[in-house]
Structures are given as C-alpha cells and as structure tokens.
Length: 517
Image 1 (tube, helix red, strand yellow):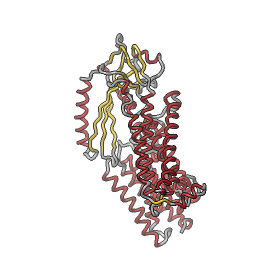
Image 2 (cartoon, rainbow, N blue to C red):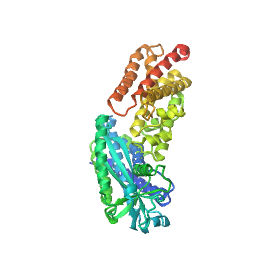
Image 3 (cartoon, helix red, strand yellow):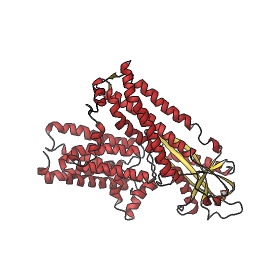
Image 4 (cartoon, one colour):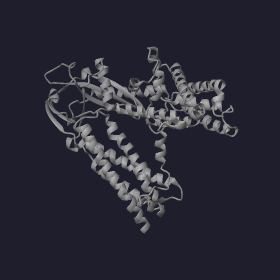
C-alpha cells in the first residue's frame, strides 16, 4: 500500500496542477486575445478544439511523461503510453468544454430596437432585436460537402440558407449587412457511388426547400452572432450566391436561437467537472497495477536525469536540419509550418474546403491552364486535413531516411521536386475537375527511387530484399488504398512513383560513382 501511496503522491499532484493551471492559462489567453480585445482573428474551431487538444498532447507526452517513468511495466512501454493517452483525452475534453463554456458564459445579450442599431453599440455575441423584418424572397443557398469518420465513412451534407434582415419600415435588401442564417444537415454513407449520392442529395435539397418555405423566421428568443468558422463561411457563400459578389468584410450572420438566453450554458459546468473527475479516477486506477520503480523515483526526487530515453526529444531533434536528414527536416518543417499557417488562416483543420485550398496554392487543371504553373509544386505542401498531413509526415520521414543519405542533399532535392511535379501533372491530366493537394506524389517518387536503386550495387546485397519489401510494400498499399477509398488522388501517387523511378535510374546511370556504395 505504501508503494501505491508513493505513486499517487508523485503523479497525481502533477496531473491536477498541470491540468488546472493550463486550463486557466488557455481561458485567460482566449479571453484577452479573442473575446475582450479581438487581437487574434482565429477560427472558432482553432480556439475551441485544436489549441486545447494540441496543448493537452504536449502536456501528456512531454511534461507528464517523466512522472510516469516511475511505473514499472516490465519493460513494456505500452502501459506508460496508455496512461499518457488517458491524460491527453481527459485533459483535451476538459480544455475543450472549458473553452466552450467561456464562449457562452462571457457572451453578453445586447438589446436593440432595429437591426441597424447593432453597429451603434459594443460588439456582442447575442442580440435581441425588437423590430426586424426578413426578406424570404431574397434568400441565397449554399451546400457544403465533406467526408468524416475515422476511415472517411461518412458523406456530410449541410445546406445553408441566408436572408437579409431589414428594418420593418424598409424594403432595402441590397444595402443590408445583416443576414438571417438557417442551416440543415444530413449524413449518408461515403461508400455509395456518385450517382446514388447525387440522388440522396437531390432528395435532401428538396426537403430543405420545403422546410425553408414553411419556416417561421420570427419564432426565436434571440440571435447569436456567428464567429469565424466553417458555419459562418457556409452562410457567407449563401450570401454570395444571392448577391453575385463576395460579401464585404463587415457582413454579419445572425443565427436564430429558440432556447432562452439564460440556458445558453446548458450542462457545460457539470461536464467540465465530470471530465476532470473522470481523469483523476482513471489515473488512480491505472497506476495501481504496475510496480513502483524505486530507482527511477529516487533519481527524479534527487533531480538526476532519467535512465529512460526521452523519445520526444529525439523527435524534436529530427526537425533540426543536420547530417543525413538536412533536406528531410526542411521538408518536414515546411509542411508543418504551412499547415499551421493555413489552419490559423481560418481553414478547417479536419476537412478544408476546396475554395480555401485553392486560395493557398492547391492545383487543378483550370488554374494551370490559366497560367498558374507554380501550383504544380506549391500544392505538395498543402494537405486536406489533419489525417492527411500525419500520414505524409510519416511518409517523408520514411523516404528521407533511405534516400537522402544515398543521393546526397542536391540530388534528393531534384528527385523530390521532379516527383512532386510528375504527380501533380498526372493528377490534373487524369482528374480535370479535381483539386489536388499533398506530398504523396513526391513521397511515392522517393519510394520509386528506392525500388529502382534496390536493383543496383548502391544497396548491399543483404539489404536489397528488405528495401523492396518495405518501400515496395508501402507503395503498393498506398496505391491499393487509393483504389478502394473515395476522394484519393491515385493519379498523383502513380505519377510520382513512376517519375521518381525514372529520375533515380538516370541519376544512377550518370553519377553512380558518387553515390554511397
């Protein structure tokens, strides 16, 4: 029992302290930088979801990791990793709920006479408008499609309807910057073929038209002013569909809320307390099983370095360009940095829209034919969501480990660029209307290079079969995955693979004496 007390005493206070202090720090940062002074104009999803879960991950796998080293799982690191995952999930839930609670709890209800009085008062999240009129005859609509689910199993459809809000004594709909937003959502299987998806969408669209035609625009308690988000973007596109031009910067979307203002926080405080309590309880249960590593505990109490390898340090060091991963590290950094720039620029981190990706440098045939040849390369540093970039980061590391030491920095850059271009060209040739993003073409090009070089003396005889098995297997699975899963740009995969193989062959034939043998 004394050993359990030692484990609790060493781990639990750190868990509680880190969770509470970090949560408070995130809330203060959000309040000052977003709610109070509007310093950082970030997407609501970034504030309310991604910053919390990334922060929780850093705490779990870096800060708390050291404390959990006193647990002895008989050399099985999966047990310690499991505890870190539990901390990450429970802390993420707590942080996200706290952010949502902050957003609603600090939202003031502004009482105004007409819609035009909104700009005369301090900006608020909620409004009650005494006198207003909606122009249903001047509405616009926009449909947003995205795939979701762990394996992209769901095909989500959201239809946004927007109508001008005007003064009761006015019929001027063209000059108003206040719009009434109503949306409808439906999800179907992403495994359906395109024709069946189209049929389901048409049925859903007709249902929504019937609902909006019969909609009571005046049955509400108050309005919520939408923040920068995917939802707001959908309504703005509906406005653009009606007016025929991009909406101005000052345009405001107001969404009707039927529940009372007093109930805006709902059960969030209880969920916040519950998520934190669940994290503490799970931690107390999980640390009961493993034995106490007394030697490691003494090391930490005495301030000595841990006898365990800190994997996160090695991962961070790999991002520093040096030695045989100089170019690989630069490529990783460019992909990660641009992903963060795009995300903080208001693009949905999980399922970015095609329009937003095109704004940041994605490619399709039309843009290239109009002269934007540079997109054939810039698109390789953009990604269609978090899962996409995680998969490609793994691919870049896997490719760089083998290719850069053999070809050297300059030839590796040439190979990567040409394979990226080959994949992009194949993509716009095969898919005339699709938007192409991602480093997969360049990565597959590196795999193709390894598969060619495996038949040369560049690799030792014993390592050739292993290289073919590893990289040929990954290439084959990636291409097979592209044929099975919808919305995967397999043309870029195949084009990059073949380009990389050809480039590597020419490099070997003309400069084999300078390659590592």
